Length: 638
Image (cartoon, rainbow, N blue to C red; front, side):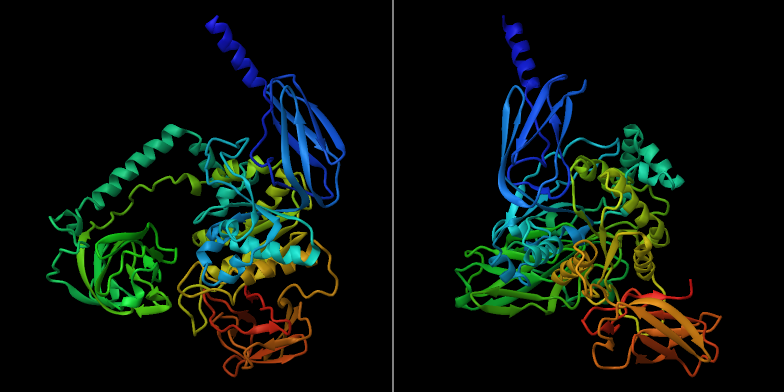
């Protein structure tokens, strides 16, 4: 009897109709498109769907999978969807509008709460119940495409939930919603530090033999595990030292610790620039500050800019925050009982394994409470806690699943491909700087791949051209980021694509610039023109149409000039360089004539090539149209 009961309950649970994570309460479905609804039940079971006065039915296949198609519908809602088999599921609060897949790496990830100072008002006033986001959980799969996400739900844009929205995606959605008043759904599938290959399917990468070979090898889990065990063992040899700051009887962050032998260090700054050469390891920093009575007994916040690489922060012996890698801004909250009137001690443990370690310049460093602040720049004390052995040449490289070809497509894109969408927003490229020249092939391949995967041959694809980043260049130079930007510019030749130029929105010392609003709104401009077909809309900055050599000058003609070309700072155009056949570039003199720019140099009698904003960080590049949109970087010496 016990076995029979177990068999009965097993069969009954297997027969229950189930739905994928995307199809649940508060979802947004794509208007004016056939709607695929899918799920699982017992083999051969009939499933019926009723929604907004329409019905559809399907029968599960031998694997227990079913898929039904509802007719296209107009924007509206909220509605309730009923899915019926042996059980009944009701999906409530369903809207019909426009659904955008937002994908890429960290600058698409960056949530509103990471920019909560810049966008404090936007968060506080977020009241858009018809803008909703489904945050795809991070997962990588090397074995093949998966059927469903491991978790996830739809959230609306209110002051609490909008904090977890992608900032770029939210400002895009808000602009589109304010303009057209249709519900907007965001499916956000993005992971920091990931290359474009990870977001492309195996089918989409077939034309790249080396990548295809890697995909094949990675399917062997025994091979992957063997490589990673070897890499881990080699890495442990280089970092097998012990941190003196944590191994002593009294820890260096403890209030009872009496510092001896500590040296001076100017914050912000890197220790390689202040007397510590080629050190990978752990360095401790401490500073005593006087805190007035008014700043105690209340919540406080400490700003420590950005730190390379990892840090743990202690105040008066209590750990108040930690970050495991270099890119996030350090903003840590202090509970009301942490600070005390008078002397307080701040200790920061910094761990670095490659390159310069320390505190990134030109960032905020201060303590704030009760409307008052204490500056934390200036001299701190430091002491080395641990020194790692130099990394040997030809060390085995760890196979990080999320950085491998197809891994994120398999688990974060493939489960959504039955869902009808309006288009794709793409912000990625930083992690492809080492193979920048191949990006010009990989980006069009990704677009083609997504159009096939979603069965939408003309699926609109809008993307961000990377902003300025790194040390400013004041002489004509080379770089990998200009190559990535050129790849983005050339991809405009793919039909139904649009590009947001952001060469003016970056920060030299932060790969995650704070200005996400203009990025989202420039993507929205591209969508309004390309997808929503707004007429007489200037949606892009100037794009080079042609160049012509006339005597000792080069004449550049542009599209998207709007009401005219300008130097947006009122000065002469900058970052335009020309060269003769030897490609030795010098800065050019320029003048604007209508939608043309004339460039020349007294040092170049027979000019042949011209470049604009051709460096990783062309600080002050100032060619714009009158509508305030910047020109894309370009070159003619290809």
